[in-house]
View 1: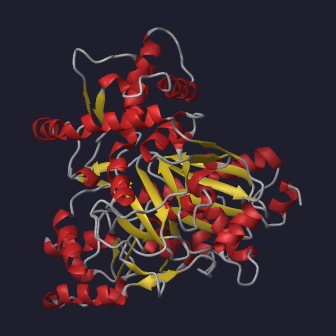
View 2: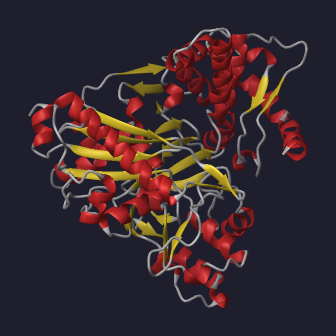
View 3: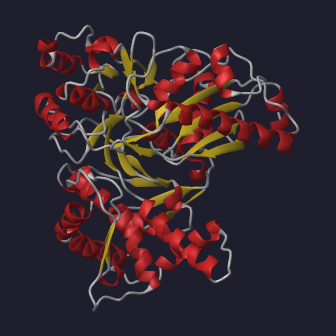
Length: 530
């Protein structure tokens, strides 16, 4: 079928992902090709010291994103959407959304960006002998318990943002295994929460005598391809305010942005990995088995089918770059010139390639928020240079691109050098990689291995969750996700593979020496300026 006929017949597949700054919808055909998209910009807010998104922002953002998709489909194909073959939702992983017996949210959504659970994360890591980062849902729950927060006894279930959206639209309290692995550790052998660790956690809170058990309040875990319910009439009304969308549409397990990033880059096989770089940045490598040692800089999560994945997650990536580009845009306005924002980004990223390999000695810290990988609970964006450094625009921009991946490199060096993990190839996606060669060169210099950017990389996680929804309905009997992606989606796909020069690799390492040495300067800035 052509795209118009496919949409009219209700055979297209929809994926929607809630990112940090944008909610995006991607509509795909039977082969997984994007045929339409929609989006809605949104932003987190700092409310009484907590990074959050309000419930109104979630539901208004969802309906506005869908309305934009619907409008684009109408303009492009002359069709009003009424049905899909399947749909799926994904979102930023981790965070804390606890509900009472009436499914009322007990406290404002605490996002992954919060670094307020240090005590809980430390105690859980020690007790479970497994790295439990601050942003994980179980850290937020345990910290609320340690704090004696009054809402805790009323909890009857808790979940992630993707799980919340899926529940409201389907009535099912479930999560894809990849997203669930950012709530509580997963046993790769069983594909669900680690039973022994659940028992340990239960014993840690036994004296509190809460009216709930940890096993009862976690969402059920599903693997990619499993049935996760269908769109209810109430859910259809939340999604489509105009009331054209039918209920009963099959839904795939809700996933986190880590899992959709793996799918969107075809990196679910062992010894492949991907870097997702936008407001935050994370790198993932699929492993043969769990790591030998516990490293607090590295998370153990899973693919959407439950295979172990080592993930280095950093809270900060492009926010500081965006702030500087906005400043340059204001200069243009002051001089009577209206810049095209996309072109401005492209030219500034491109000019970075002409900078000195070591950025001319310039150093910056992009810490809008805390950065646990380098030990920071709070952040303060900082640019540092000496009078002797080469302060040019190319060096300035290259410095910001290096800084965006610097904390990530700290974690990856541990994975590669201490755990001896082999990385055959990394796939890049997200806004950091939109300008040809710029972000790709910097990423390759940081990792020391080839980095490939596919033509579809710009579609990101929304496309990834659309592919997971498509896989649920289109896979052959017994067909694994990896073979489905390889044979049905990415067969014949082209992309650009790049390996950084040794000069760039050495330059990044030189930058890192100054970066690590200057962390005490960043600490002083946090202490004195916040």
